[in-house]
Image (cartoon, one colour):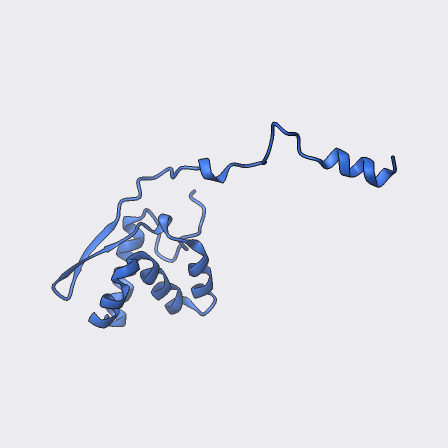
Length: 118
């Protein structure tokens, strides 16, 4: 057996250990309570920030802070997003909404939804 074959055999995963980390078994350490607001005479429900799919958030964040905020709202509102977008939102209200949303989710203003908990 060559050295390369020995190294490959040594790196093989044992049958009783099919993976190094079971991400499917990871549970949230916080209660993921939705954030509910009233805007334009209607009730809107935002999914908890820590429950959002991070991939679209990363893409939005690459285009700056405003894009990151809007991307977060889009993900958090899901199917409600088109109606929320039609209702309109002044920038000064968007900032206050985002701060309140972060606070509800246990985050500090300016903290990314992907930031690790301290």
